[in-house]
Length: 361
Ligand code: HEC
Ligand SMILES: [Cu+2]
Image (cartoon, rainbow, N blue to C red):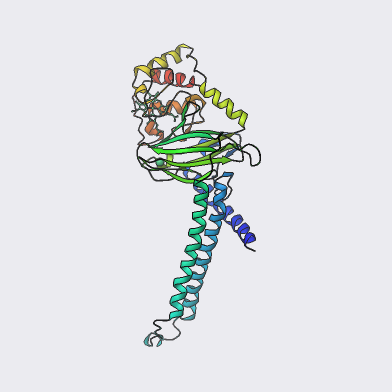
């Protein structure tokens, strides 16, 4: 009986959730940056369709909580409606008589004390079990390790064992249920305020708290691109602090790792060469790193392999030459209030810088 109820509740709430979320996303215009992409992009981050552990481990407790709270809601609203109808004024003299005053009914008081206590107790136990299961998950030897640092308003991503640094797009291998399991374990930190890591189809929310290290992990069953975002209000551009997880077949993941570690070729062509010169003459290098060069700034995202990313500005725009140009010309035009300054670049400088940035792959 119970599983059947869960199943249908899941179906109904899933459909509702999809409608609400897609309407919401469309309203925000968030889909625009993704619309151009082909492939298996999961546009709508549907919490009722987890495609990874530990998100999958949260589905049943979520449905249980929804079911219980739905039950409470129906009882409360039911009693309310019953009382409104049953005890409505029936005549002009109705307000002159006082209804019977019941005080100190042991039975009623016991009922409304004990039942909520039991309900809360059950929900606490169920939550505690899920939390322990997720937090204490074993870390196998072949697990991928990531250090994720939240910034206003982008994500710094390190693979300490692989020697890779990138931003805003996490690449991980798919993990099979029965075959070899390669979960990705993530250490979460913050450079400024509290952020929250949330990729709904991968894992539940985990906060990134300054001066504290939190942990979470992902073990996806499906390849594709999964969208996430910062889930803790962290300043004006919080809504543009998007994150994507790109899940690869193990071989493709190895290819990505190799592509990230390959030394970047020197730019060719007068425009890109000029762009590189400008990049080092202007103050870009104070804030950005390009491996193997003098650019060692860490205030902004690492640009070593910038041209291999799908988006720029933490998902605010697709990484097309036109958008890069618009970004450099005035970051505020795409992301008002963000911490990359408008550097008043000339059109020639912009052309050169865009050409140079395109060679960073
Ligand atoms: C004061 C520090 C600072 C300076 C100087 C600076 N940037 Fe940035 N840059 C940032 C920050 C911070 C971000 C991230 C903004 C965000 O997403 O909210 C950024 C983002 C970027 C991005 C997008 C990266 C990505 O993966 O999303 C590019 C490209 C970029 N900067 C290029 C440049 C170039 C070229 C220059 C020099 C003309 C420059 N920046 C100068 C701080 C700086
Ligand atoms: Cu944030």
